[in-house]
Amino acid sequence: MSSTGRQVLVAVYAIFAVAAGARSLVQLTTEFGAAPLAYSLSALAAGVYVVATLALRRTSERARRVAITACAVEAVGVVVVGTLSLVRQDWFPDQTVWSDYGIGYGFVPLVLPFVGLWWLLRHPPAGLRTPASTT
Amino acid sequence: MLALVAVAAALASRVASLEPPVRVAVVAVEALLAFLVVADLGLVLRADDADRPASMVTHLGYAVAAVGLLPVLAWRRPPVDDPDAEVEPVSLWVVVITLVAVAVCVVRLAQTR
Image 1 (cartoon, rainbow over the protein chains, first blue to last red):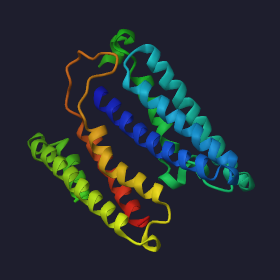
Image 2 (cartoon, rainbow over the protein chains, first blue to last red; image 1 turned 60 degrees about the vertical axis):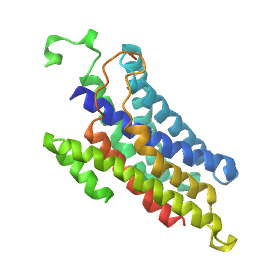
Image 3 (cartoon, one colour; image 1 turned 180 degrees about the vertical axis):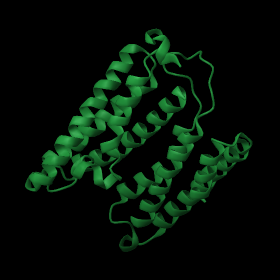
């Protein structure tokens, strides 16, 4: 179950890394001046997804901490950007991955960091497991 | 077909006997996707400028994603920090998620045509 959970998380984060990365690359190179804040946030989101993907693929405690940090940054980002995109629409002339709490991606960007944090906190590396957490 | 194989993969995570045919079906899906993408790109490249996608980069991006996601995500490999570890088959739930993402890419490929 632990391996399946890790594989699923890596797959979902990898898909979002590709989607957000490709989107931000096109936006930044072709129309950056139209919505610099939105497109910069798309690039930030892509970077967070890449870091989370790479960290989740590794099994060390250090990688786990990086993954937890990435998920936490992602959670704060999607909540803050999602809220700002609703209350200050003039700041966001175009959509980002995190706009409207990720509605353009079926709200997966809103749910994903919390699922990731939940999984990471429930599955510490083998060397750190207590007897109760190994069952 | 993508939806059918995705549902079959989800079922196979519970019914072990379904797993071998599902993994064969995933390979068939990938071959079909490669054929469709090559055919689509052939049509796009032969079309007049007026009939080409508004954003060729976006269309090509969806084409690459549609054909590339399954090999990248369903390719068996050991953890980066433990290359000698025994490699287990990719979870069928990863296959399900990847097929859903591929279906989205195929739909977007058609929409950007």
